[in-house]
Image 1 (cartoon, rainbow, N blue to C red):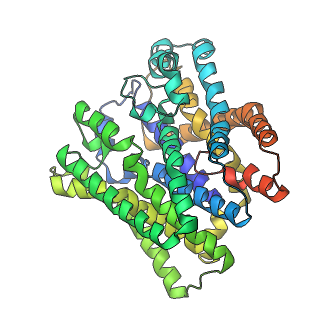
Image 2 (cartoon, rainbow, N blue to C red):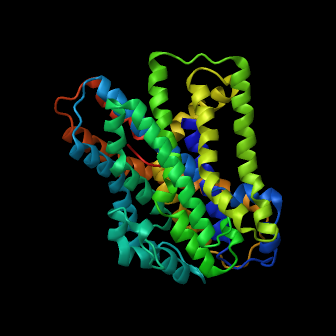
Image 3 (cartoon, helix red, strand yellow):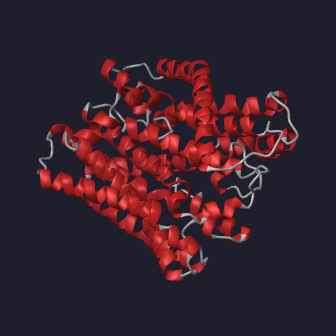
Length: 421
């Protein structure tokens, strides 16, 4: 999962490079519409699927870790469960918010610097910082958000808050709980279909040309935790079976592994590139509603199939690539990478003094600069705030903790998507 986590984080950084670039004057400004309607660019338009991968990973790890701890007879304290999560996420957020409201405005200059940095970052954090720290900003419909991409952390935290319901039930009534989770996934699919149907939404955000319709798409479908629940619930099911596979590995034939890999690849490609017709063709209400209902669980199932086959020792080349040591190193920084990358991109872009040429080649070149700068900043933030917070958290929870449990909670347990467990 290290490789999946890092690649998904890089995909989101690349996507935000494109979206932030569209805020600013371009030399070929009219090219944006042509770019949006090109089938090859659906890889960037559908980069939002990386967020659903994070929700899947969150469900997997919270379930796997809980079942592992229960097996070791570790008592479950719900207050410590929540406090542990809050202490892992919040110090970095506090540090970033303090930087935004105090030092960011003096950090650089340019014709667009004051207006863009103030409207996109500073204003939201001055007014609504507390909504970010309470992890409720994904339901806040104010025009200015503090750390705009932090909506994911809010949605993920809200799902984490309800996770003990499923975890305690899994340890007592596993089969009934799994059936119940499948029923909830079906209900989620039906609910998303009805949402897309009644609001007459296009399945792709850019396909909702009207600004008001885009806001409906964002606030009713993109941000809420309940519309993001299906991948997370699929992650809970997969986490349970991964826990069982550690006791007895599932024997899969070469044919089944090949079928799973091919189907997963086909589903991923169909989701990433298949939505092109929703943008270019005439609006069809039923088709778009079906896409909205199925795209997230289908993506989660495809990624889950890859994780399951790799975890059981199959899919050799894929498993080898996703398990490369470089991914293990970078995965330690995925949370801070996620938190700071949007700010780094805005800082680099808001200093521009001339219009720039927008093309994929230039955007990719800028992305690698964004990633290098973001990794540097994330390393500093990790060393200055995250690691000290982890050590303090260890001291708080050190009582009666075995050495093996400390190792698990201090390292492997703490990595789920860009979030920390």
